[in-house]
Image (cartoon, rainbow, N blue to C red; front, side, top):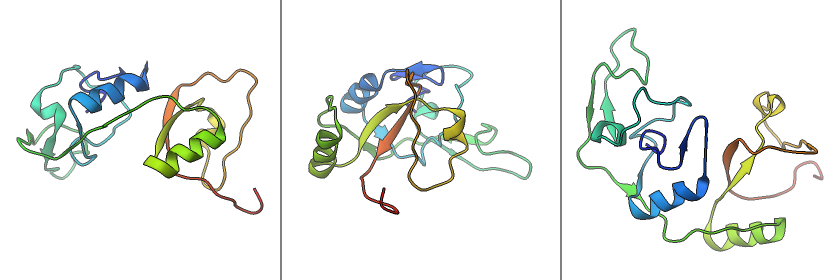
Length: 144
C-alpha cells in the first residue's frame, strides 16, 4: 500500500519520514491486505483495491496477478503515534527498548542479497542508502 499510494516513494527510492507521516495521518493495513511484491504498480493510485485487496488464485495465476481480486471495504490499520530521528548504537538500543522496532536505511549490496543468516557485516567507505529495514533488537552470536 505504501508504494501503491506513493506514500513516501517507490521501488526506485523514497523517504522513510514521508512513510511515517502517511502512517500517522492515514494508517497502514497489515501485510495481508497488500503483499509486498518488490515492484512498482502499473498505476500509482490510492484506490480501494490498492489499499486492501482480497484475491483468489486459480490454477496458473500467480500471487499479485489482479485477475480475481476485489477491494476489501473494512480492514484494520496501524498508525504511528510519533516518529523522529535517532543516531548511534546506544540511542538506537534505548529507542528499541522503550518503544519497539525502528527503521534503518542501509546500502543493500550484492553481498546483502546473498545473505542467508547470522550476523550480517559489511563495511563500505561511502555507503549509499537504498533500502529500509526494521531493526527489532540486538544481541550476540558466537562472541560477536
